[in-house]
Image 1 (tube, rainbow, N blue to C red):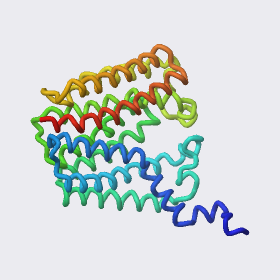
Image 2 (cartoon, rainbow, N blue to C red; image 1 turned 90 degrees about the vertical axis):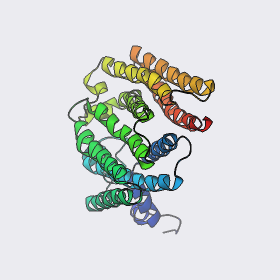
Image 3 (cartoon, rainbow, N blue to C red; image 1 turned 180 degrees about the vertical axis):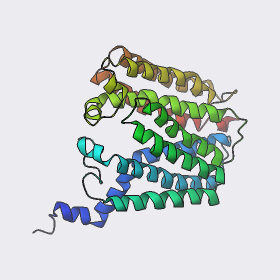
Image 4 (cartoon, rainbow, N blue to C red; image 1 turned 30 degrees about the horizontal axis):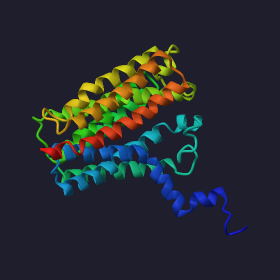
Length: 302
């Protein structure tokens, strides 16, 4: 056999391939978004003058606990993942990583991550990280095959990292912006996940996942929830700036992005199809990062 040609087993056993599988277990795109949320929230909480060392420690602990939750989620859904084309090649259903190895990663990263936050950041941030893990793993994951209300519970776990970022730099809880940031992240997830649920409704239905796009063939409920979420982020997003906006440009950017997402949600609600769902998904993926990064310059203007 040529040295340049490896069998599947040899590739799977190589250090690089094994590392890639462990990284995939942590759902890196989700972990990165969680870390960005924590970092930007910490920046906003301290009005543009954060404790950068505290943020670095918070991000390390967040990466570990978020990765643990994602790995546990994949372990719990390994049978479902193996039956869906979009997830069948994940490390566990594909047989590249054993359940024992996954559980070791889950337990070790959760304990070390929470302990790291408790010692090097503060106990409240550690408690919030564990709460996020519990909501995502113990409630949201099993609810996906039981009730379409799983999206609302998942939105809570998706928004809790906002509180972690605020707590990490010991931001004032009298400042209502933490609540606005939390609600922004919470409501944004409805148009985002309704679009995903529509695009993969057949696969979800085949494995018994109870999404609104599966249980409601008319798609009215998913459309209504997408519109409600997109509509709710409009006032909430403006509240994240605080009572005194730095410039009208910030307001225009944030509000304009919200209107764009709302229009896409309304189009999906009125006529749910592959095109409108994909457009809504793209709009949500554009909306959140741009709004969060726009907030970075708001506190700096004093």
